[in-house]
Length: 368
Image 1 (tube, rainbow, N blue to C red):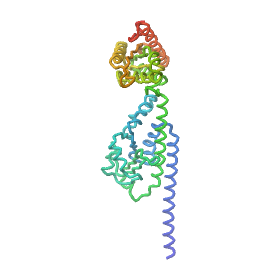
Image 2 (spheres, helix red, strand yellow; image 1 turned 60 degrees about the vertical axis):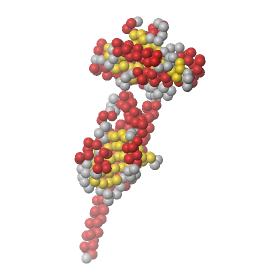
Image 3 (cartoon, rainbow, N blue to C red; image 1 turned 30 degrees about the vertical axis):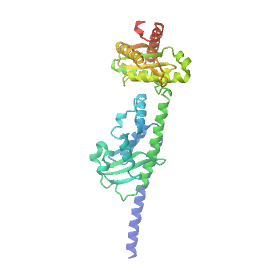
């Protein structure tokens, strides 16, 4: 009898030791992945670590992030990062990272439980898995909470229907949710800081640093496709008179108006920036000199039609002069950075001619 009890005790001890070893291995894997997440230096890298490394390490069919994105601000930050870094492609994440900006949908997400859910896949949770939904049998849905606020969900999907069952402990996934929430929010804040360094605080347009960097990128891309790139250099006519009459606050209103009018006229593919003071620049990808001159004339005409509202009953006319330059990359072999500086310098020279020819007009560098 004692022998039977000893055997049973031995079997129980062996089972406990086996479970302890499995949990230890899981913890080692988890800690390794946590360190990789915590050392990621961008939102893109955080997502790639979750989507690729976690899915592979834990033998999952799908790992997805659903993030609450009020006002689509996060998506805007990521689009700007993509323009800055060619290796960060939003399209690489679109099947695994979902942004929810609709008010009603955000409200619906906030009604879901704020603690890990382990269950078989049901209709209520299918949207968390996108194109993987037909392959997922069980799931772990982890709410990502920061300071009591829901920022999204991490969803783990398995082809095994009992991989995530309601009677399982949630210690590991709860820890994972906490780590991921911190890493996602830190990465988002980093993207915000990056973008702030490229934005003019008054007009909310891109700044000079961004303009030159983006110009070099556009020229490099154009060289690959043998395309033309044009540049507009825009200056507000007689801006000092506006400052003298309405003060610097009035001058700020005028500059914000100028930025809005330029943005209104230009295409989504064009890049506008405040270069300093009352000077603005526009990059026109895949645009020849004729197209660039046409864009410059449209800008000038728009200012004739849209005076600046300085107060409830005060409207002041504002005009601009525009310099135009075009680069045919098919004939250019110089480094993009050198080409960028040369193209902007040519547009600036054309602007100087427009100013000396009576203002409120556009001049092309090729006509100098």
